[in-house]
Structure formats: structure tokens, C-alpha cells
Length: 604
Image (cartoon, rainbow, N blue to C red; front, side, top):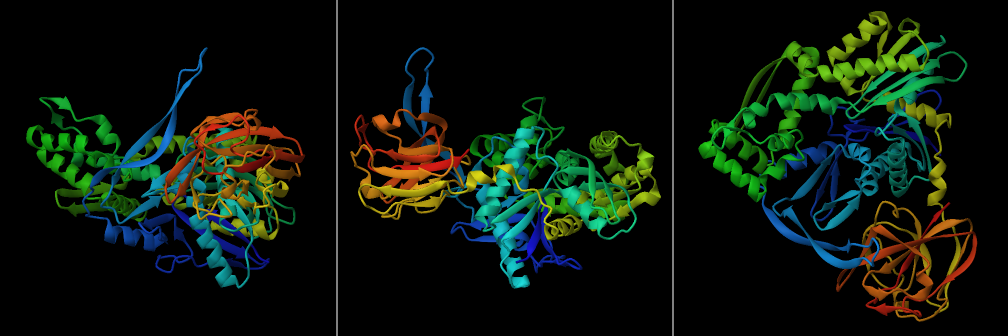
């Protein structure tokens, strides 16, 4: 069974297999200029059908660009509000939530999903009427890549080495959380043997198998989202020895934003409004990324923009701004910006021309000027390069070779920076799009990926489950939009990331009114935190559940023909052994509970 390597990237993703002699890149996107590279894009329509990569971009451009955004308020699942509590009993009540949604959208495009792993507060997003956790979104891409590998290799590919940056964010706990989300996404995609390797270390492994001479290499991996640096001793018959690694949260997307900042003059920067005031800076902030631009098409900001067309010092810029935020052309504009950045790699001058309704951008951009714009990134990269050499307790001249990879590493200013620090003769260019995945494949072949210590949390700790009612109870993996009862078609619609992927008892819903003191019997093979997911509107909990702690920030929603109902989450640590839990209507219960509870377990 082949072990494959996957580079899940901010901008592009790829898969490869190494058989010990030859590297086999997997074709992922026949429509792309490089079919072995899949742009990390997901387009999902209202029927939740998905397109990936180039097809996703083309579908979005064809169906969404130029379409007017139409906002409408819609009700979503309720949440519990808790007021007070210090020194007195808290007041709890349920509050219906509403969101403004673009009802004219045929579908939604998601770009740079990997970047969301940086944010420790981000769990997922609503797409039309469904909520998708981050691990489920990533799994869509990984599942497609796995299927492509299996189709081309002719074998099942259950073993994978996944690439990851040196750090996802500044907080080590946040980086570990991000990796665990990626691990769950791989599980959801169907992989069973999952390990990791840092992306620059993987690139070092690829160069290692191609060189006989032992030496000190610095891997400069500059991608769309992060800069990753590794110093390693590679080559010869000994395995690679990593000396130092370092990561910085700077990437090619930041360079695109620098170009966008230079274009803000077309959309209001420098304009005087309301009798001489500066144009609202928070409006300009929303133009830094195409995903946030439509926020300005909401009724209140759009009304102000239209008023500015009559009263500001630059009515044309205000008309251009309205076109930008209401006609859904931000993604198309950023694609043009990226093309201009690439053109400046090979040319000293490039034109950026973009015309759409009231937008008329015509810029002659010089490489020299672009390098002035990205000076903050150049300073950051120079600092990180010097620091990783210090971390390795080396001098700059002790580095024998610099291996340059990643799309942003092609920018001449960064090539010149490397040459100024290490010397022109030491710089080697690796394939900017496939060298990391090639290294992942080499690592996979030699079974040198790092298996995460937290993998046990997603093993099944239930030795058996049985109900005294004799109805069918069994275990499942808790995920959104999966059936949650053995005797109903009801589905879970919202699952917090904390619970996603855990093994869970799927009960019979007909036992919802059980008054048994010991309804559910189960055995745990190892100590675990047990979560009881219990319908939220009970006035009093049954006595058997009162020893559990309420998980205040967790809520699960279950959809039935009669509507979607919220469930609270309660937890308690259990040792290994046999246990029993009572019925939902057992002694002490009062209130409205007409759906049975679920039980999930996370092994310690």
C-alpha cells in the first residue's frame, strides 16, 4: 500500500508518491497550467455540490462576478444567553440569532482556507443554510486529493505524511490546535495512518536524496501564507539532521495586499467627505482582502457611499467603490493583482489594467516601486534569516547551500536578499510548487513522518454500548450532517470543533422519555472525558447528570422535521471501566425534553 505525501498549501496544494527511485507527482487539476498543482479553492453551490481548484475559480467568475449583492436577514439557530452569576444564580434565556445573507449568490468561493488555522477563535462558517467546521472544509480538499492519488496509483492510499508550516501562529498552543484540526480533516477524508512533517524539512529531504556530498543547507520556503526556514545537515549516507527551524507569519498574500494598498486611491483614499473629513479608514481596511469587500454593500455603508458620490471631493472614486463592493468583482481584481506581481518577477515594469463599469484602473508599475512597497516584508525576512542562523549557532558563511522554494521565493527582491547574505553561488532554486510535496513523498517512503501524540483522542474508547430497553445503540464518529439516532433520520447540523471527530454513542430516539436510572450501559477501555449532549430546554436536569460540569461555550444542534433544536453539553472525567447513565426523564428531570441525548468520549 503506497504511502503518499501531501502539501496542503495556502495558495496551492499537491500530492506525490516516491517509490524509492522515482518521484511520481499526482495530476490533480487538468484545467490548471500545471496539472499537478491544485489551487486551494473551494466553490460550493446552493445544493452543496463542490468544485475545486481552477474549476472553482472559473465557476465563481462565470456565475458570481458582476452579480449584484442582495442582502436579506435570515434566522439561524438560537443560542443561550447567560446574565449575572457572581454571588447569585445566573439568569439564562434563549435568543434567536439572525444574519444578513446574500440571497442572490449562486454559490460561495473559499480561498486560503489554511490561513484560518492561524486564528484560535475560528471554528467554521455558515454556507447558506449549513454550518461547516474548519476541519470539514479542509477535508473536502484532502478527500479529492486522496481519490486522485488512488485512481492514478491503482491502490488504496490510507497512509499519508501531511506538510505543516513551522508555526501556524505565534502561540505554540494555537499551532498545536491547528495541526490537530488538520489531523481530523485527514481522518474525515479517509486516511488512517496520518503523520506530519514541517514543510521546509521535507524540502531538505528531497535535496538530501539527490546529493552525495554532506553539507549544511538552509531551506528558504516562502509560500502564500508563511515563511518557513530550516537549517539541516544533509547529503551522503547519513540521514538528514535538522539543526534549527523557524517560521514567520508572512507570505505571498501579504505582497498582493501591498499592491492593493497602492490602488486604494481609486476607491476613496485621500478623498474628503462630509465637508472636509477624511474618508472612513475602516472602509478602506475592508478593501485589503476581496472576501471582506462585500461588507460595504450592506445597507448602512452603501447609503453613505452613495451620499459621498454627491458630496465628496472625488465622486468618481465613490462610484468605483460602489461597483467594487456591489458587483462582486474583488476576486477578479485580486487575480489581476497576482498576475501583475508575477509579471514583475521577469520584468522591470508591468501594467495593471482593470476596467469594469465605473472602475478604471490603469497603472504602470515598476519593480523598483513594488520593492519599496514590500520593504516591511523584506525587513522581516532578513531578520528571520539572521535569527535562524543564530539559532543554529552558525555564521552566515558556514551555510553551504540555500534551497529556495515556494511561490513568493521567486520575487527578485528576496532572491537578491539571499544572495547578499549567503553569496550568489550558494543559492539553488527548487521547484517552487512541488519541491515540498516531493519531500513529503520521500519522508513518507522512509516512514519518517511524526505521528502526533494526540492521535489517541480519536480512537474508539467504547468497548461496548447497550441499553436496558434492548433498542439499537451503537457508536459513530461525531460530525456535522450525519445521522445521530439509530431509529430516526434526524441529523446533527452544528458540532463544535472540540467534539468533532470523537467517537459517540448513537442512541435510539424512542428512548427519549425513559425514566430508568440505568438506561445506557457502556465500557471504556481507557480513562476519558465523557460528554453528554442533552436537549437544552430542560428546567431541571436528571440527578444522574447533575454531577457533570456544563461546557458553557459548547452547543450542538439537531435537525428534525419539526425544526432545529439546541443541545447543551455536559462533561465529566471517567476512569476505564463499566458505567451506566440514566434516561433523559430520570428522577430529578423537569421541562421540555423530547429528543434523546448523545454521549461522546475523548480518551485521556
